[in-house]
Length: 156
Image (cartoon, rainbow, N blue to C red; front, side, top):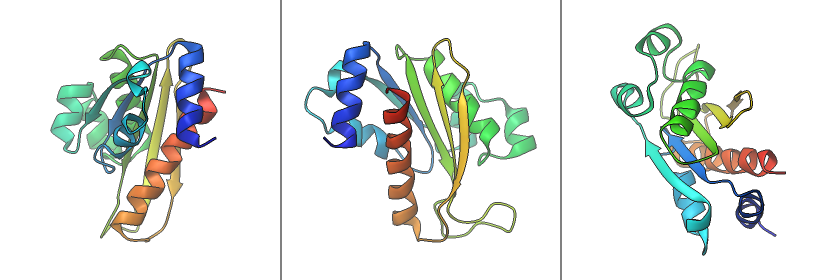
């Protein structure tokens, strides 16, 4: 069984709907989830908040967090996930923000991606993965796949 099929089956079994909040992946997680036949049973909505202004306006990310930590941070990933959960009909939300490349800096290198996973009545999980300078397409695919893995583990 593929990870996508596992997510669909587990979310159906638990009666959970999923929302996504994506920046560097531009909706790739939402696309992967909705490629599944029957995904309307478990997918609520997706937010693609590429700009900082969209993160604030659509997800309620605080300007202070963006100024203090930057868009690529666990603090912002947490606020994105919690904002998606609060603004949707979902019981589980995944958020992704990162630097797909090219570029980056010594402080925030290319390939760094922060994830947030929010679930009703549970603490929000955040983590950072450094995929390295794989190139834009490979970093985005790696981030998508990691997010799907986080969703699958959260539903077990």
